[in-house]
Structure formats: structure tokens, C-alpha cells
Length: 379
Image 1 (cartoon, helix red, strand yellow):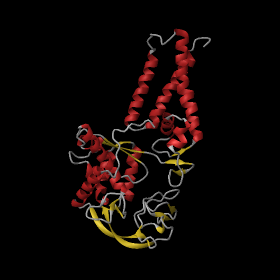
Image 2 (cartoon, helix red, strand yellow; image 1 turned 90 degrees about the vertical axis):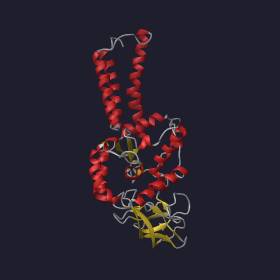
Image 3 (tube, helix red, strand yellow; image 1 turned 180 degrees about the vertical axis):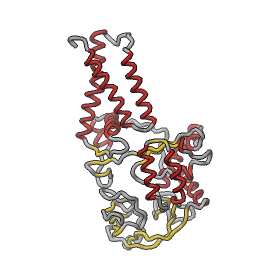
Image 4 (spheres, one colour; image 1 turned 120 degrees about the horizontal axis):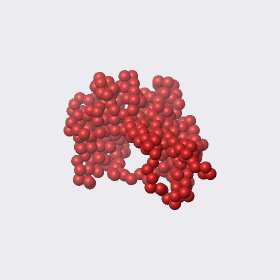
């Protein structure tokens, strides 16, 4: 996709292991993590507890009654609510296919509810899109509960401090990974990672999907070592769900468009896909990936509008003047260009990518109309 990494890291790298443990230990020291015995799915055949996001094949959502994919989320047509370990009903073991039973086990919880009042005061002043602010505020007001941050795994993951039988939940160490990767890059580049996460002039932008990626871990534990996270320098943007054939993207279920096999290997340019994704949807509308709509966007807009404008302009200039003439553009043209540039700049700073793309294409449409209305006879 023509993406160049400043730093490519893995969440199980030593740096992220160390950073995650440091943050979790700090949360424990400050009283934000506590132990509680909970009922959890257990497979008597495999003789193991079943982490809901790894070893539970299916079950019933306790909130809406729909079939839940893997025990940590009610997806594929359900209510979409996050499920804590032990909440799912009639769990099935993904390894042997047998029915699970429920046994008690000690786990650790992040006292997220303690930050409810802080977040209710903080979020309304957050820069970024209104969709992201409203989404987060609704979540805090209605669903802000303490969060189980440990899982039972005998491979991978970051060991929970003081426990050999528990690892930190992936949605804890994954967001922390962004800090860790910055540390690795900074060490190699001779920079200070705190300038990028904790500096007074630092801007932190979170792009969140419909899942449970939690910036509070950054705001409350990881970043405030130098200065305090403020709403004026933190921005949130919420991405819409992406779907394929009416279903939420899922690799395990095959509801996915593979970037290589289905797209790049077919000779399709990366920028066409970027344009389609940005022009089709905004922060409030789900994207249901459609090859038909993709083709229409490329043919009608990239080729028909932008490509046509560029071709007509260059063809006319070459035909009539043997190149671009050294003439000042008319004031109304300059005014339209400057207005469009200002609009695009403001929209990009607000992370409103769809309307920014629309504004760019509107300028191309203006150019086509200008040529059509001002073409000399016979052209």
C-alpha cells in the first residue's frame, strides 16, 4: 500500500513487555487495579480455562441473545457489546468443540469507573470530531464499568506482575505498544520519546474504531510523566465500521477483502483504494465494501471528473499554446482555488477526511465547468 514505517514494532518485543509491566505496576501502586474471583469458561476435556478472545468458539450473548463470535464481543448482527470473561452463555471450546463449564478463578480489574467524573469533564473539551466525542461520552455515561485486564494463556502476552498463570489482556498491551514503538524509534534516532507523548506542545491523536481500544490507559497511566494530558492537545477521531457483503470484516469468517490477493495482485493502484475508502464514508456512516461502488467511484470521479479535467486542460494548452502559457489566471479562478485550499485545510485539521476529499473533487468539477463555459468556438 506504499506505506513506509518509521519504526516497525511488535507488542511482544522486550520494550513493550517492559513498558506494559511498568504501567500496570503504576496502576496497581495507585490503587487502580484490584483482584476479584470471577466465574470463567473452563473446558473439562482440555483441562484449561478458556480466554474468551482466544479459546471460546461461540456462545450466546447475555444481553441480546444473539450468537457471539468468540466470547469477548457480541458481533455479526448482535448488540456489539463488549463481554467480560464468564459473561457469555453456553460457551463452546474452540480446541475440542466440547461444551464448556464455569469455574471460579482470580483475575485483575482496572478500576475504570473511578475516572467517570474526570472523563465527563474532560471529553466535552476534546478536539477532534463531534462523532468521536459523543461516542465516548455515551460510552462513559452508560457503559463505564471496571474492566478485566488479565487472561489465562500459557503462550505469548505480557505476564501480569507477580503472576505466572495470568497475562495482561491484549487490549492493554496493544495501545501501550504505540508508546513502546516510539521509544524504540527515539532510541535509534537519538531523540527523546517523551517529547512525542508528554511534551507541553505535543498533540496526541487517537483514531478509534467501534471496539474497546482505550485511550484512558494513555491519558491516565502512560503519558503524564512530563506535563498533564489536556483536552487542548489531544484529539479523537472515530472510524466507521467496515463491512463486506453486509457483515462486519472478520478474517476468521472470511468476510474480508485481502489487500494482496484481492486487490494489489490484480494490478489495482493503492491510491484508488484510498480514495474509495475516504470518499465513500465519514465518521457516522458504515462502509459496506462493494466492488460495484468502488468501480463507480473510480470511473465517475477519479477518471470522469479529476482525470477529465487534467486531460482537457493539458490537451488544450498543448494544442493551442504548445505548453502552459505564461499568463495570469483570472481573479475568480484564484479565488475559487484559495477558497478550496482553505476548506480542505480546515477539514483535514478536523480529521473530516470525506468532506476534505469531496472539496478537492469539487474544485476539479469547477475546473471542468469553467472550461466548458469558457471554451472558444470549435473546442
